[in-house]
Length: 112
Length: 113
Image (tube, rainbow over all chains, first blue to last red):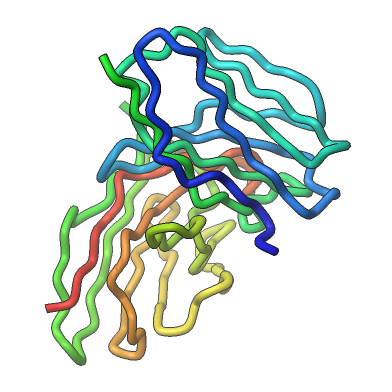
């Protein structure tokens, strides 16, 4: 079993839809959780950074952590074609960069 | 604007050749990292450095080397010992001796001729 898993997609949705992107993980000690957006041939861009459980909202994006289920989600409201990208989750138990574990990413296409 | 600059964007390597990928940051971050990205896999850590003149191996350091002579610069050399070098290479940095989320450059795609 991989340490962090994501549905690879591609996930295709119509413009304006609510998108749910998910990661599952096996290490219950993870405490720091991140979501990155990566456009084609570009580096990942940090979207959300959360500690422990709960929700965090930033504009159209909401990050949710459920540590009891070892499951994190990123919700995108009112999705736009510019949201078309690969979304990576990452997590760590101690917030030290060398210990971050990245998921393989989910490719999202938002169709106009 | 502060950021991380990677160059070149595309690089081709011949058999038996060493190549060096450049990474420069003007964010005043202490820590820098090199990752390799392959299709269907998460980012894998090659090397990291928390301070100048110090660096540590990551999970897949074999066939790679780095130096950290300046805070702003963390070049990666892909040596001829790396038998499967074709990948997208990402450089990142973070504050505070390596804590907190990482910020990434736009990568270098390395291919074999």
